Structure formats: C-alpha cells, structure tokens
Image (cartoon, rainbow, N blue to C red; front, side, top):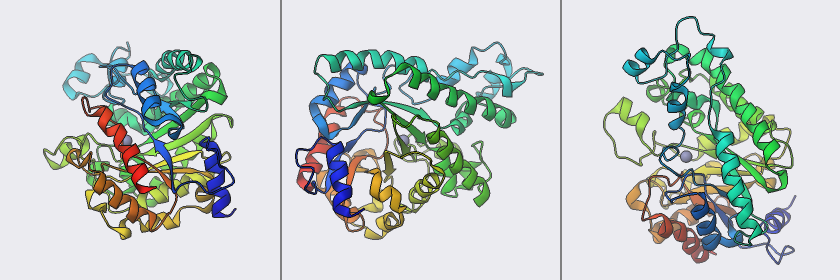
Length: 385
Ligand SMILES: [Zn+2]
C-alpha cells in the first residue's frame, strides 16, 4: 500500500472530508486512559468539546477515588476475598493467600466489567444527545495480566498469574457481550512487559516477570498478542505501551524519585518498536492503534531517539494508527511547552512523517491542569500541520 493510500485510510477513519487527498501529517490525538476530572460524563463532554473528531475514541477517564491510581484499587478488591490471609497481607502490604488455597483456580476480581458497563451507559446517553461526535468510540482500557505484580506477593505470582490472566480474558468477553461492537474500542495497557523488555533487572525483580532473558521477554510479548486476538474483529483494539509515571518501581528500588517520572529510563524508541513488532507477528486480527510513549526528556531535537520508528513492522506502518506520546514528555514541568512539543514532533517526523499525538501516559494525577493540557494537543497539532 502506498503512503498516500495509507494516509487516506486513516483520513477516512478520522471522518475527514477529503479522503482522496493525503491528510495533514499529524492525523489526530489519543488519550491513554486516566484523566483528573470529576466523572465519566465530564470526561466525555470535555474531550468531545476540545478534540471533536480529532479524537477517535474516548476513555472514561478512570475517575473517582478508587480508580484514580490506575489498577491499585484491585488490591483493595482482592483483599476482601475470604481466601486472603489478612494478617500476612497487612504485614507484607501485598496480597497473601491462606495456606492450602488453590490460587490458580480463584476468580480474582478486576472491576473492569462493572466500570465499563457503568461508563458505557453515560457514553451512549451523551452520544444519543449529540454531545459526542458520531464516529467516536467508547474506549475501555485494561491492564495486561502481569500487572498483578502490583497486588500479589511474589510467593503467589506463578499461580495468581494463571487466575488473573483467565480473568482478563473473561473481562474482554463480558465487555464485548455488553457493549455494541461498532461503538467499542479496547486498549490494553502494556506496562510491565515494556519495563522488562527495557532490560531493567533491578526493577524487574519487583515484577512477576523477573526473568529478563530474551525467551521470557518474547513470551510476555506473545501473550499480549494472544490477548489482542481474543477481541472480536469488529471491536477496535490497540495498545498503550507504558513506562509508568508514578515512578513507584524506581522509588522502591533506586530510592526516592519525583512523582510523575517514568519507572525506568527509556533509551530510545527501540523497545516499544520491538514490542509492537513482536505483538504484530502473532496477530490474526488488525491492530487498530498503538500508542508509543516518549518518557525521556532528552528526546528533544534528537532524531536518533526516534530512529527505531523506521523499523516498525510494515503492516503496522500501513494499517495501524500510530500515536506517539510526545506531548509534554519527560517530567511534569515539561507540560504546556508547545515549543518543546513541536521540537519533538519535528524530530519524530524526520523518521516517520505521519502519526497522531498523545501524552506519554494517563493524566489521573493532574487536576486544574487537565483542560490546558488537553488543549495543548490541539495547539501542537495545528502548529505542526
Ligand atoms: Zn501509561
């Protein structure tokens, strides 16, 4: 497929009026999940007003005190299970199970289905009222199963992974049964696999994939692809590759660090490109979109940092919407700096001329800054185009 045809396809997906002509180089925006707004309705209406059709899908913002910190409320939910050893869990600050429990057979609740159904009600109501652009989909974000490292004590990782992975597959099936496929988009948050692929052994030791051998990393990436394959073809599916922004793993292993800093230092786009290509190799369905983060503030003006984008699988280059997380990259104080955003865009475009833009991760911990940060996407997009 020619570059023009590819752009036209995306142009069409983005409801552009001029599908026979290559669209502008930056073809839209993407939000990876959390937004520090009051509730799902505020997220849907605010995003619709700011982005219009330039945002193909809207997440529910993962709002409210329980969901604000990404998946960490899942630990609270699991802690209520009768099979949990409360005393040891309190001491270890990670879920421990009672002696003799068959952990692999447990149903470990994630909350994803309940949250998706609740937010879909709001989304469909607003769409019916014309408050969300017609072509915009409802985006449900689920973390990949290795996230259980955040909740469960290492003694139980092997067994708990079996249970947790099964639960994520169940969640996908239930969500797809509850929400019309033509309105639904599923994003898998791929964080632990990214950090392990980066070869950070010290951080990996705190995850349930401490083995960072090429075979172990390849298996972790293959499992992401299998999960994507489980989504029905009419449901758009994509990936958010994530370096984290809580800095928690780094704090735990390397000492106190700044909140909002990525968990590990990203050397260049090589790791996220290799993961994307690894996932693509096992796919039996389209990967509709992929979000590739830029978490390193040294990416400014640095073409070499973006050079690995040239190695993206040709299928991904031709048929997947590619969103680069280069808006406000690096640290909190880098946000709302359009000049820096444009310099990163220019450096990336020297390697990959067409892509969409995004933040490096979610925006759950932002408060008053949310609206200006959202608007900064449009400012950068218009200035670059
Ligand atoms: Zn993220």
